[in-house]
Image (cartoon, rainbow over all chains, first blue to last red):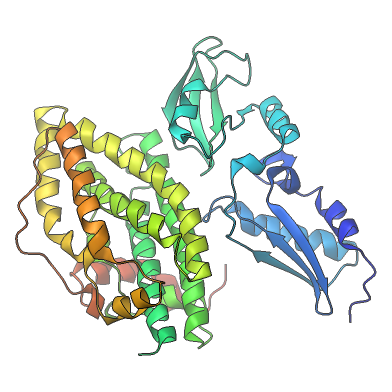
Length: 163
Length: 252
């Protein structure tokens, strides 16, 4: 039986430390994936929006959420994925984008509502901020990133694609 | 056939298309011409396995027999699969894979754009998510088909041959049966007759840019709506389903 010992805000605050396993400097909250916590007689339901449908990080995030809340004595916990409205990089806040840049990943630049392929032309190097960069491949080590190289500092880097 | 049964079959068909193409594309893993392409093709496969997971999960809920997405993927034989024949065709050379991808991604671009407006909320939500991914697949396939078509004599020859060989599987993308007509009436399914001219115009334009010829419509292969497949699907399933067939209920 659930004793309603935790408020929605408390649960959300706990969850705010859960990081994206692929980009550990950014939390799922800053990414815009954490949508809501619904508290009812049957327990705590955490609502998440997946970034990409096939993203393997989602099952890791789900396991991390369950482990963390269990540690805090919050149970039972159910994690539900919702597809609508579809996740967009526009939900990523500026703090997340700056952390991502410092981590060495160029953050998404333009609104996904615009032409996502236009945005590819103007990616700045996260290391030296040069705008003289080249797209190597639209597909990288994870579904969300593209491969670039900087023509100024010659470093290769990843760009988090508009989505 | 009730609306629920029709929706189950329709969702299953969509899920099967994504699953089988995903399996085919993943065969390129470590075999692509270069590393970036290896990543691209396996990224496509990942998008599609995610989509099929969502669709087959929903199909299982609609069916109401407690079949999970994994059971639907691993415990059906080829005659119980309803994917289009095009997606099960072997990868062939890189030109075959890219032409097949172009045919499918153009179809999916128009199809999922319409599906976003479906009166079925789950299908509309999956469509909105899928469409973002399909745009990347299409841009990639289109770039390659133009580059190969307008490239060397060898790449042009191979790409034109891939087009000519795969053309007879393109008609089936637009086939509709009683499942479709029932759901179109409900505002759930898409009238594929409306997509067909858009698809052909888009393909013709890409071919034009790649100095490639669009084939004459001749005999079109058919059968998947009844679960009748080419010889290739059985072999694909025997590999994909091996673990669950050999060790039923094995867990990761």
